[in-house]
Length: 355
Ligand code: ADP
Ligand code: MG
Image (spheres, rainbow, N blue to C red):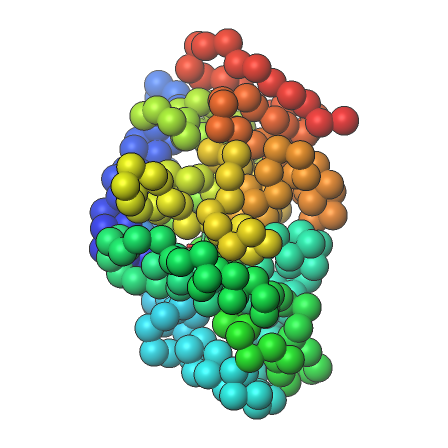
């Protein structure tokens, strides 16, 4: 799990507060809605905002308790660099052992293998060593220079990918000792899916689980869809809004979420495993999809796929709602996304709709 570091935590919290207030401003209209229970708590190193409709105070408190316990567990079990279940698994794989997985480990790794294959390994949770090389396996913002070209070349020569894992039943082995799992690209999505599962088990069918601006919404609010703000990647405030109801997740990956600067150059945390460097050309990608795990992975994958390859990768990942904002501010969308997006900043936008 991406232990979201303290500095990042502060940034994310700030971002969430902004997004949550935008969400409220956009979503609540003018009339107060007395049956909306909203609670915020810290988990996964970010601010979790829970909005429940039709639940009473007691149920809401119970939901907060159950979800925070579950998220705490996910955070610990999937942490990318602190000692825990994942670091132990990585050590065993690197030692060439065949490892017996828990059902949860098998399920999340199996979906990682599938999502990576669909993305042609752009989404590559096996690239933990590369993410570590760039300094993102740390609670603090990396202060060091970027890794040497030689270190990156070494990584690229070994080219760890999810295709080098063999998963048979609950046993896992790796044919590449350089393979190191880092599930930071989809663990938040998984945690949000788990939160929704818990809510449904409790009989709560109308809710939003918002984790640092990425969310899954089920049901609706008194028959009304919610309007979700999508953050402008280069300015404070929202660029667009989307109406969400039924069962949909909205996840965004942006180059502004976690980065460091060295000699005036910005290096962000979404790394292109084929080049070994932070992915170029894109500012943010927003995905709408039913399950949050897939939406989270796809946002990362399409960010790396970039302006030319994203439509093919989206299709392979069975994503039909995607919006990519490139470095020059041009907006690229699938036709279904275009039908859902309302620009909120009052400015003209150059929009490319994919065929
Ligand atoms: P956020 O979690 O900030 O919303 P993302 O979902 O895009 O952002 O995930 C970024 C995280 O994913 C990084 O911090 C890193 O742990 C991991 N990551 C970076 N590059 C890749 C990649 N090519 N494939 C899979 N995971 C990646
Ligand atoms: Mg992601």
